[in-house]
Every structure is written in structure tokens, then in C-alpha cells.
Image (cartoon, rainbow, N blue to C red; front, side):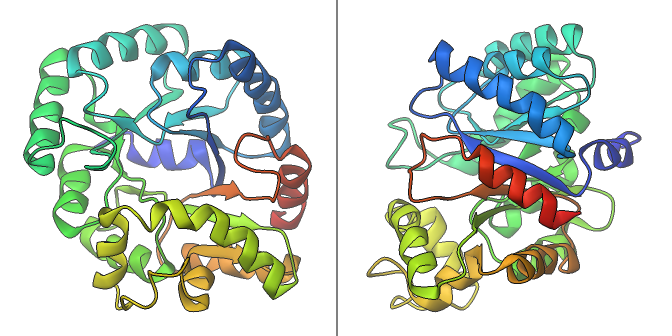
Length: 291
């Protein structure tokens, strides 16, 4: 696809992943994040990825508040928004902010979507509908974990935005994708050097994901054991899916994903204040250590 390298160049090496759910339609929350996004752009981040099942309308306020920042959904559930609705919303945002919105799509999880049936086939059909509606393949990315969906990311999208993965998964994903498609894994960051405290903060976030088989099955494919994915997650698992430590340690863990083949890493800062608080001070610290 002709614009793939353009997308890689536009979003750069680092972005910020931030959760909106369950407040996706909270206008005050969106306004707060839009204001923060202007600072993230100034700090040098190339993209903001909106977590939860977000859509183009949630990206619009961030795009309006910034001049060059790319905003993507990470991810929009195919069960929550039908393809025709998604295509119309994409067209509206594209008209207002050409080239700056990326539609990140995923199949979510059986525990979170009552309609969850034959997820791979449903995703293929969704992409077919987007094609028919004129949404360019090179402006959408897929939340791919397993080999088949990674291949779909290569063949039917601009690339993949895997969530809750390791550097080893990133290396495997790059091998499947090849050189051209975008590979932009999400990585959680805890800016805490004390091992016990850092892992305790990490486990508060990790616990909810360990109840979702899509993630635990992926960990098992990567060589982790049942013991690793129970009891809040083993130290081995926490250390693989979180970057924590002093500034040099955090930077090294982030760069490990680039060395494994990531073009861009979507950094989710985790603090003991919880997911609803925007960690703006930590975003500033992270920007400084990445320079």
C-alpha cells in the first residue's frame, strides 16, 4: 500500500494509549483529554490511541484541539458499531481532518460482547463491508494477537495494533507481517523503581485482563504456563508486559519492543491513581526519558 510508510513516518516511534471507557461519551472527559492532547503533541508524541470501544466521534475533539497529531481507536469493537455506521463516521472525520484518523478495529471478547460468534469470520465480513463503503485499507489497523488475524492485518489493513503483548510476540508478529505493514503494540509503563511497588501497581491493572481467554491463550502460546496467568500474574508475566523501573530501565524495556520489530509503541502509563485519572505529569516524565 502506497501510504504505509507515510503513516509510519507520521506517528513516529512513540504514542500514548489512554482509556476512555466507561466514559466514552462523557463530554467533560473528552474535553479534558482534548486539552491534554495538545500538550502531548507539543511533547513529541506522534499519536494518541483511544482505548475501550471508541469510535471516530471520540477522536474528533482531539483532532480539533491539535494540528498534526494522529488519533486512532484501540479499539473499536466490530460488535458495537456496524460497518456502515463506521464508514460514515470515518468519512466525516476524514473530511474535517484529512489523513489524521486511524480506524483501529477488533473483535473484543466473548465476555464483553453478547453477539460474539465466529469472530474471525465476522471481522472478515466487516472489512468487506468497509471496502464496499470506501474506507481505505491503509487507514485501518487490527487488534491482532494470533497468526490468522496478523495475516489479515497484513493483507486487509495497514497493519496491527496488538494489545497486552510481549517483545517476543512483537518479533513473531513482525515475521508474519513482513517489513511494510505497521506494527504498533501497546505497552504498559509504571514509572516506579521499587520492584514490589511497581509490580503491585501493575497487577491491579493486569487482573482484569487475566479473566479474558483471548489474552491468556495468547500468553500460553508464547510459552507462559497456567501458573503465570493465575493469582494476579507471575513476576515473569508482569515483567514481560510492563515496562517498570528507573528511567534507564523503562527506556530499555520500551526499546526492546522496537528491537523486536515494532515501528511505533503505544505507551499506556499506569499509576496507583487508577485508570480514570489522566497521568499528565507521568506523560511529561516519559517524554523526557524518550528523548
